[in-house]
Amino acid sequence: MESRMTPGTRQGFTLIEVVAVLVILAIVGGIGTLLIGNVVEGFGFVRDSAAIAQKAQLALGRLTYEFARITSIDPSSDADSIAYTADLSTMSDVVTESHSVAIDGQRVTYDGAELADGVEAMELHYYAADGGTEVSPAAARLIEVGLMFRWGSGATKTFTTRAAVP
Image (cartoon, rainbow, N blue to C red; front, top):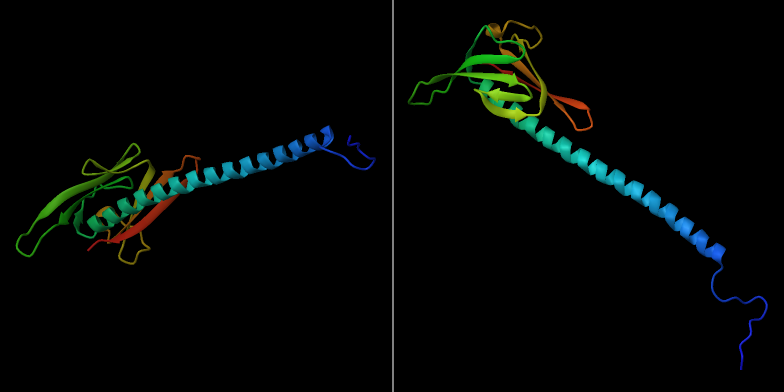
């Protein structure tokens, strides 16, 4: 027996239906690719910003620790560098040392050793004990340190801390 198609029954798809499905799949695939691209780009941005924030936190934490032991600040210190004497005394020994912090290109250095890299700018501000009146470095009782970093996208972020000088 031969099977004959009766009017109203079909087998398979027409060419127009196949093309329509392919077009819809291409549109959905294109949108999916854009979304995945944005997710990957966002991940890269978050990764870079976390690395920069960690660099800034480590550098500013170290500077806060060091500045808390200052006994005197060299009058030649300015907004880009500071030279100072610190008290490193223990219960049995009296020890003072001279140190310096400066920006060298895109590196912040502590006694010439790299403290942080990729720094766009560093600013030091010297304040009286009230925290509002700017004074000369030698008279400072509060030091504000600002480190500016640049992301790969060109955006900048400044991290700031203040350290009390005894």
